Image (cartoon, rainbow, N blue to C red; front, side, top):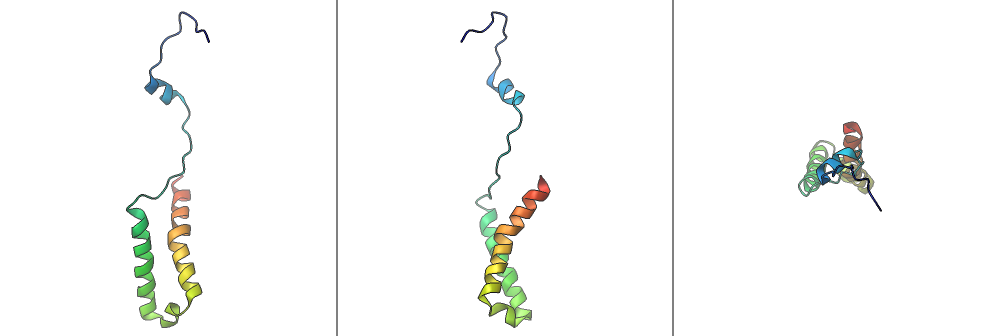
Length: 81
């Protein structure tokens, strides 16, 4: 491939800046993920102290964990966009 003689050389930083920003999937950091699980567990126990029936349901526990670890981060990512 031949380039014209008067073509200016472009540094890699300028070439990167000229490209449109690509959309990347943001993943949870190594600190955020355990914090989410800890917050889910702590809030589940705290609610279970006041509403004892809440602790006895495995379906509620699974839904609570799903809410905290999957739905809550997805909602926050959507709001930040």
